[in-house]
Image 1 (tube, rainbow, N blue to C red):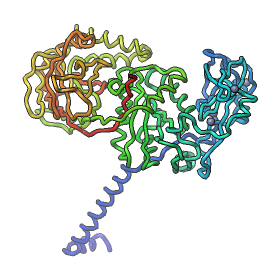
Image 2 (cartoon, helix red, strand yellow):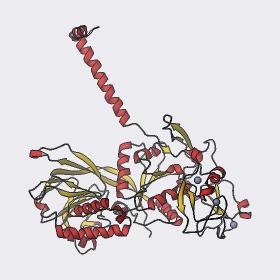
Image 3 (tube, rainbow, N blue to C red):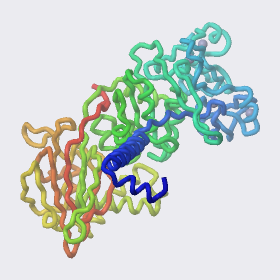
Image 4 (tube, rainbow, N blue to C red):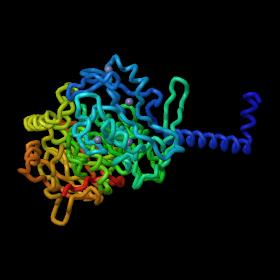
Length: 541
Ligand SMILES: [Zn+2]
Ligand SMILES: [Zn+2]
Ligand SMILES: [Zn+2]
Ligand SMILES: [Zn+2]
């Protein structure tokens, strides 16, 4: 059929119907395929198991360390960030040949496995599992530790008496034993990846496998240390470095166990936790995991209200304690909110809206200005902001800088506030904070004893937001030391704020969960998004 005859053919009514239905089916198929691609599941990626040890350079100055090959002392050398064997640079080749690393996967036919012993360099205060005497105390490469159950035993007689089978010890409730995983390779040549094909639940009591997701960039070097510590305690496949694997891919772990209650320990700042929670919204898992937090870096308001106070974890005993707290934690529902921002364009026309998720708080005005100044400075000189104390100090410095500049003056004249559809008369103020939780600006409890008003408690799972007003940056400083009260603007399920621009001020500083930016004229609406199950630390009492 040539071109002319095709159009003649198309002129007949039956052909028109035929052609348009074909066209519609084609469009439908294209949208379906693109939707499928969007919802395509990622594979749960693991390190290449054939590569053996994962060596990192290190100075072993802090405690005496001995080479696992030549058994003499090491001052500088390499150590494996998974099984923790250490060798001199010149002994690395022998280390690869003679020492096996922790295996991620074994045949799933088996239901038990032997201990994996590594000789020497035991943690301080280790005790022998047989005779209970101190272990690994002699100044040489001596005694053994199992890199799965962490049991330590004396070499010689005690070692001979100890059980052959590894029970995974205290970690058995959360560990993924190698005999429960099958791996496969996917992808083309050159881009081959190793992924988990299948997970079979092991016969362990109360088994709730844990995925540790850590951001190595949070909290100076603590993230890197934690990743190493957890690789030693758990199956290395359970430990996710966020600089290598995005949270969406990491969460696919839970899809491998559709009926098991999985737990996730997020190590990082509130931003990292928010990132994981957003990913959780996207992946739509058959069973939602329980989320626990180990806070690192500054801020950590979300972690604080859930009882995970800021605590630096340095040695192995502290990590054991952290895991114990995580295991004993109680579950609690937690509200999440959607912040819809409709920007106003030229001549008052509204531009396409954006929806953001909020976990802790969203604010406009002087407190956001402090955070914004702080972030701008940190981007220019990141080396200045490596320690937690300096970071805290900077909040104060930028706070007082804002007192001088008063960039958010007369905010009440530029914004309109509506709570559940009711307009609120604003007093003279420079900041408005909408809170889901009772912790703000790195640990300031705005509402004393969680009481917003008599009989009205501030809670993160009641479907209500509390709204506070701030007179000035100086008011924030006073609130932090409990020398002032915030302006109580009200409680609501839906909050709407309209921001107008004036000749003097075209933009207003804004922050959402600690992320600041400058916002032009717009309409902001905060509505309930849903709840997630979080883990709350049990009180020590
Ligand atoms: Zn050596
Ligand atoms: Zn290793
Ligand atoms: Zn063991
Ligand atoms: Zn012993």
